[in-house]
Length: 164
Image (cartoon, rainbow, N blue to C red):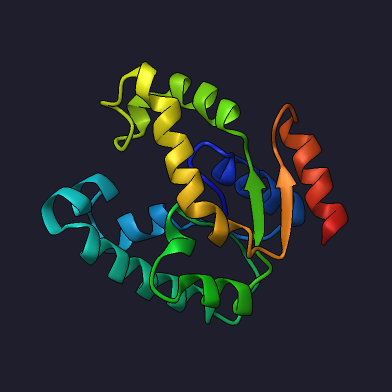
C-alpha cells in the first residue's frame, strides 16, 4: 500500500516475479471485472459506487485460498473496512515515499494520472501533502514500512524480502 507514484505496481510486480507468485493490481482487477476504466467508473457512476465495488473486490481477493502479491489503490486502505481486511488477511507493506519523491514522479507521469492531470505544478505539492496527511494514519497501520526515497527497485525489494 502507499500513495500514488510510490511504486506499488512496479515493486509488486517485480517482487511477484522474483517470488514466483501471481501479481494482482487491484485497480486493474476492478477495471477487468467492471469492463470500465477507473476514470470512467468515477465519472459515470461516482466515487461512492467505486468505493463499494473496491471493497467487494478486495474482500473477494483477500478471501482466496492462495498466495499472491496485491497492489492496492492509493486510497484503498482509507475506505469502508478495507484497512481491517488488509491487516487481518494479509501482510501489509507501506511503500513510504516523501512528498518530493511523489511530486517528481508525478511530474513525469501526469498524463497517466487523471486525478492530478489538471493540477498546476505550483499546486501539486500542496495537493500531495494534503492527501498524504489525510491518508497517513491508514498507511501507518501496515505491518511494515519501507522508504522508497532514493532507492532502486532492487533495493526496495531486497528490504521487503528481509522483512518477510
